Image 1 (cartoon, rainbow, N blue to C red):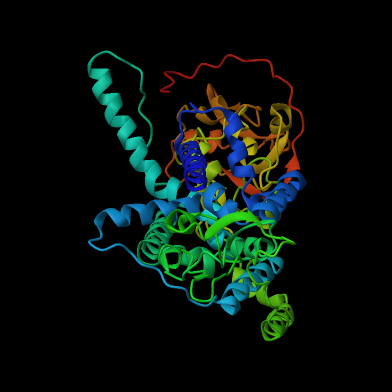
Image 2 (cartoon, one colour):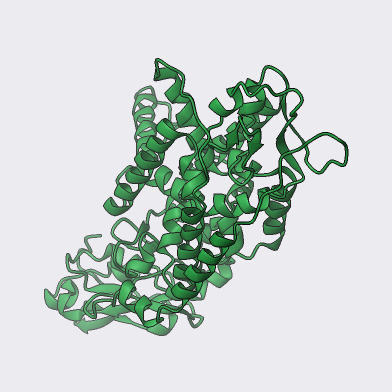
Length: 504
């Protein structure tokens, strides 16, 4: 029953969080956002003490249940393993192997030090939750929307408008490539080698594995019943059971209960580990002083890297390019880099499709973090969805009133490219789409009007840039490296102009 219960909860969590990433029509309740908040790295970055303490207690009491139930990447590997069994002629047999402790902790140290030096891209790449989110948003979401559009076409042909057509285009080629590489690499490892990623590369698995060594409940041997038949070892996808020595490496055990299900003698069970009776339990873990020295030396030597190296790695923004725009609530580029893991949940949930994974806009350190682009739309004046769904605190929650005064960028007007000024033709589209009247039309020649701007009340929503009919954009938004507070605007008295056949 333990395995059935575990599989049941894992299936529920995995299905809901996957659908939450895919849900572009906002059919699922907002309360499902807690599934992203209980992921370990987002909880740490958002300083969510309740969830951090809860996850630590969960590991100290029950072991790495998180890896088998809560983590979507962990469940994804289990799904791949189950599918693999359907296609194999022979059942996959696992064998115990020693833990790659040096490799595991080296990854943790490198990721941690890189993050502290202002290079968060490694954490974003290796965090299992964020990696899974990118897979779903970049690879599967376009396919999901294409399926929706197919249903829309079918239903509409019968005058049924249950479905509506959505944009299924790929937002970022680089994010798609990273998503595919993640999908294929981790999928291949799971197909051939079980939970190898979790027990050798994943920094979350390593940290939780350290806590799980001291958990109150563990999978343990009953030495009086065990005959070393190796069935438990052959079914352990974490390679952590040494059936001959009747020992289990609890730092790698993901508490999947496959071993308990496979044992024919009830010689292995999940129970309270600290017993005072004569029953023999698993031997306590021995501290390897050599490994401890290696980790200490690695940490000290890495921290000693000059901070100036971080600047060389991240790169310098081309002076001819605009400062990238970060989403409202992110406070600016620095705050976004300090907290974002590029899970792309905000990208998936943005109803205007203006959030895209960055390529080089933020430099290497901000690779795949969300940036605002206005080719397909503009930021709705009253929309605060991205600030509501972000699990890491990279995009802080905003009220609608706060959003109205958050200036993510400032308007720039180039009259030489403006068709109203250059070609002396009527336009005014930018002023029509500005929600704060940062763009207004003023008389120029007779009945002709041209735009003028007021940066103090502009919030950088991009409405003017999106609607500008000029290919080179006569009006655009220059991002603020650090968000500012816009001034309140007063509703101007509307004036009637004779546009002489206004074409919009």
